Length: 218
Image (cartoon, rainbow, N blue to C red; front, side, top):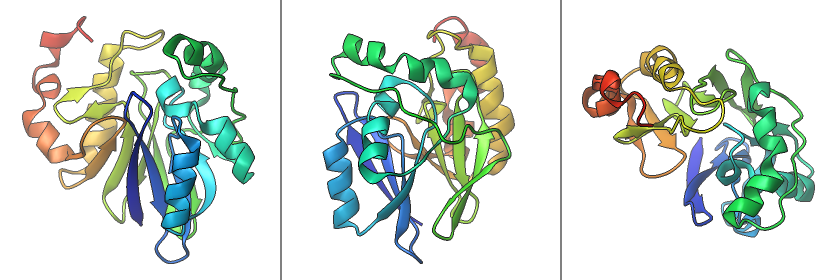
């Protein structure tokens, strides 16, 4: 699988273009905006986009979803249905953050932990990782040891939990029980910032080494 990270919007959210090397078919994970740019990247890399994947419903991750799905006539898969309220709030979120007019996307398939999503010959495992939002999911390519973690985990940090229905202890549990068992060699793409490995974060991330110190701060 080829992976192209496309930071979009002033939030520099890591929209990810995925391509099956065997077939050229692909998916877009978290199209937060700048749809024309995403489409140009797909064309230049000869990616035939089959679907859109969403880790969660925040505006910086999902605001381009409805437009991209309509223009390509492709389905939207994810997040978990517990994030439906966030997607329903997209027009209000967009107005508050200056994103312009944004439509509420139609989700064709709500995801649960243990589900699979596929494009071309690539199959990704779905992990349910609430905490940042109640319906956050992660996509994991076991063959390439790559995880798309949205805003669950960052290099040196974790996702915020001060949004509605966020929960710090739930997020720490999601990381410890769902992500870290995948193995130290797993590389992950966060929703913002650089990539890292689960091993590096397990050894150095202060929020994982001493989570009680930061309770109430995130």
